[in-house]
Image (cartoon, rainbow, N blue to C red; front, side):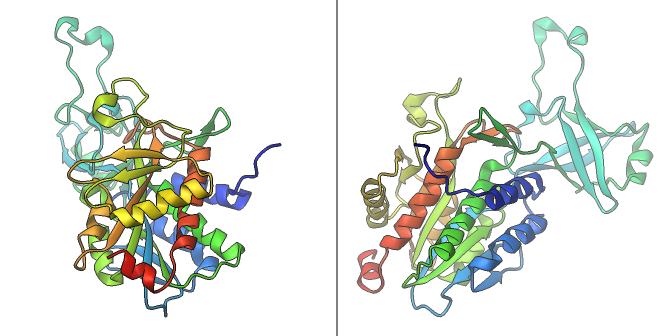
Length: 362
């Protein structure tokens, strides 16, 4: 008997629209509007801040506050310099990978709309095979088909224009979701699905739930740093992506063994409050939700760190989604893992009780 999916057609239609929309760091607002429109039927009110983090709130009057969080932004580039002959040099906006850039089509976002371009690269026949040059941030350039700098500027392109890849959502082999920006709009999608399930199953929580889609994670957890001071939560469960370490060129001795299809990844790290983590793993075992474990060193590198060390200390935990090919245009996750992250957050929330439980987390 086939298992029943928790993702419905409306969910998947939203996911595709949400992923295909560009929302680079600092320019997340169109994605946030899509997200808030989807979430609106399932929450009581919204909070937004100056930089665009968005929070859907259930039970805003409650004494205790629990955050479930993902981040909304994707990596991108900025126009940095335009040569006299009309080629564009770039700098990073987040952790954009220069090695995947050559031959990629790009969208340059201007006041006049999208200007198409390509990251050019010299033909193999013209390169010195004994001294093969690798792509670097200094030697990759974008060509928009212009003859000179003036023509580029007449298109509306100027220093500071943000640049994204147009690669769109698709499914491989029936159950692998592939797109750019799965890191971490999958997080925003999964926490929205938790809110949907709570609403559809008529679950009443004994605390306020703050479904938080933070901005600017890709340049240093900045959105989470801001929004946690606004919310002042008691508990935060963060979801982000982590590496599938079964792909080539990743050392399991360093990164551990994590694999698509084997379930959510529960983090062990100084920022992860152990009682909250134990509640999550106990929930997984009780509900037969498969999960994996990951040991992290000084920091998680996710918004967990921003929440944990704010407001005098917030009990925080990290549930990650295994992902292949991070910070490329073909990021890949397994549908089963997506559903199990949603289930694990949902069931963990149902296990958090009012009153003594919050004292227990201290």
